[in-house]
Length: 250
Image 1: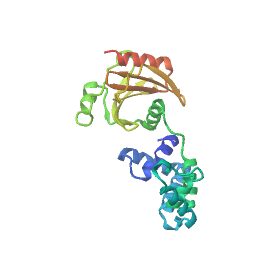
Image 2: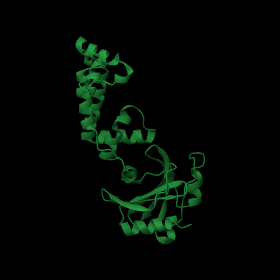
Image 3: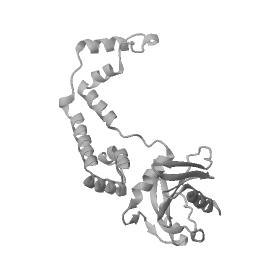
Image 4: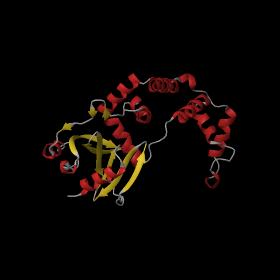
């Protein structure tokens, strides 16, 4: 777990929305990172403050009457007057203090991991530990790795034996890419770890192979029938391309 991923998952962690493994990684990271621990404390305090009744104020009668007049207009002119801003509606239902808190929360949000390469790199980095990559089933035998997922997945992952090409199979683990259940099959090339993520496609048109470099990590993304794939590593782009060519060959 690194700071970028921790900040992205912080609110889900506070709301107990993470799976057990990711929550454990968050606990470990927060306990060792002063900056993320401080932000965690701020978010928890903000949530408590927003829930406190002391932050709620009754709207002035004049403002309430103005809004009610707009609501009671005939249907053809029922839209709020231009002078009625969105923040005025919020004041009626809550408080200006809540608006200030929400503004602070919005500014404190980390940049969204909006693209698939960024998601893949974030999960790759989160899997790396001093003891080696995180693995649920460790084996160099694809006939051991692939059956392990039976009953744990809605699809059968693609696991290749690429030792002849110099890529050693280390094992695999359950993963998530965005909101989708996924698998990460883990390989090693010399001292470089390669994660191959796969998940069911969303029914969109197939993704032709494309490459990206995110925070020093190379990413190759492609589709094969109803499955989407992303290979991530810190090895150079030529070696990662050689790996994906071998992985995609039946």
